Image (cartoon, rainbow, N blue to C red; front, side, top):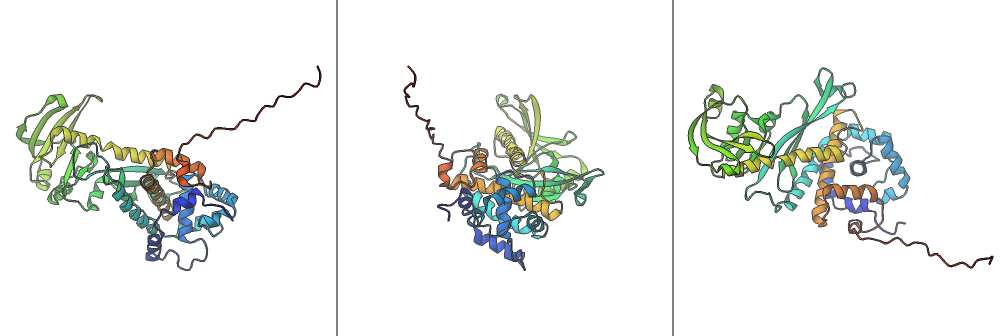
Length: 388
């Protein structure tokens, strides 16, 4: 009998398991399943993400060493490569996608009061996508080019707390701008995007829904100036203009005025041209908001470096999506734990500590207390010499 709970058990207790079972019942995930239910499958996949496991054999070997401790971790069934492979192939990935959305809603509430870095009360979103390369021979269903397979991970991130509020996994061929059709615009919110999302018909839909967008203009952008506003060139803003589109189809798709801001980034020695439908904020604030879009790039970089979404445990579409959604849930779990336990460490530091202490039997806060425990050195006793 264990004297206490492992850190892994304490982490899993933070999750709303009753709502997870609701997701399981929605897609009949445990229908006719006698062993290795969806909850156990999720726990094993979360363990693989937290401890950087690289293969099914790796997961099986590590968990079998734990023996009877697995029961107290919520894993009652035998963990084998066959069980894991079959679960990845057959358990509906939408179970884990819906559960990730539940965790997103919970994390969003915890980070709602985080500072934005810009004096603005509105919600600010960054929209972007990253490509995950796959092997053509192993993943023929994700054909991207003649000799390459790939999938895309699209994310809409709330910049207060860097929490992704919308995630969509698509084939690599899907152009980024098509994701705008899946979004439900929030009135008064700002959507920050790069030039890949510059589609004036879709941007006009955002405008009509009373949402604001900030994007960069393309090199061949053509417009006619209506007004020029005063600017303070010491802030880096070179011009602030009200313009209308002059090219036939863009002007037809977006018939109202736009705001064009030219900004010079002294650090990178680069000139940027922004387009927005917001005429109230100062021009330098618009530039600062676009600069904050870099947080979503850091999010993609973080999950690619510290979670397992570049090499996969299965080759089917379902197995790939299950692994990505459990990786997203793991990221959200660490973010929730940071807030609810009031941890001062960064998400990276928390993940590093967890990877080495999941099976320790101690209060979870003690693992992050950073208290220095002095090492007791052996006492050297004075020994009389046998020979004088």
